[in-house]
Amino acid sequence: MSEALDTLKNYLEFPAVRYAIIVGLLISLCSSLLGVTLVMKRFSFIGDGLSHVAFGAMAIATVLNVTDNMLVIMPVTVVSAVLLLRTGQNTKIKGDAAVAMISVGALALGYLLMNLAPKNGGRASANLSADVCSTLFGSTSILTLSQKDVITCIIMSAIVVAVFFFFYTKIFAVTFDESFAKATGIRSDLYNLLIAVVIAVIIVFAMNFVGSLLISALIIFPALSAMRVFKSFKSVIACSVVISLFCAAVGLLLAILEGTPVGSTIVAADIAVFFIFCIISFITRRGEN
Image (cartoon, helix red, strand yellow):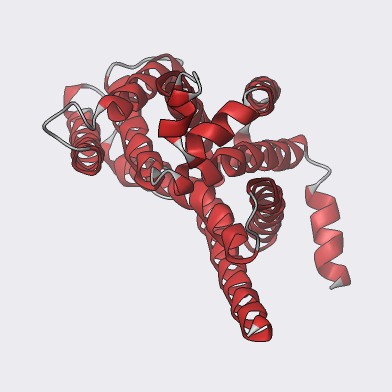
């Protein structure tokens, strides 16, 4: 145990490791805040769909040799979030089908473009598998963050947290009863749009952290775990935040010490915590009966 602590202490002397922990905790915090709303509104798959869209946008940026790929990924993902939100009552293609179409289509086209890129003067195909794997499942790129990346993430996280708490009552109303919210004068469409845009921003920043295929787990698992034990909206959100931060910290530290993939390790921690909370919920119900 002491040897592991000494190793961790040595790693923490490197700025890149400290940057990774800061960014990881901030992304986990933001993801957990809106994860509860997505689960309760049955929008869980939107996170998955948008993560695949972000992958497709990244492939486009790669083919176009865009220096700052955020200039492509962020607008495309946000626009897709708005389009996914608009699919529903007034369209022939319902929401779940639209998410499936956009998700699979973006993933397939993104991979196709990354394969075509080397043939058109892009990167060598030998690096293609590594690029795709790291983008889909996360990689140690989280350990190559610059100070500018950290500052950007801090600013965006502060905005996300501020938006959530400033509009908390409206988000609460829209989450539980959208029809009643409309009846009381709340512009539910506007707040649904706000939720979708914020989720899109979180997903773009989280893509290098856990990978585009694992982002949904980061958003959904803490909320599902908290809902096993707690019932009130505030309690579920508070517990979800604690779980998300704990799993991110454990996953990051294990990944640093053992050299495992960051995203997969964090998701594994989330799965373990989910089963623990399921057991607690089962014992609690048995005790009440």
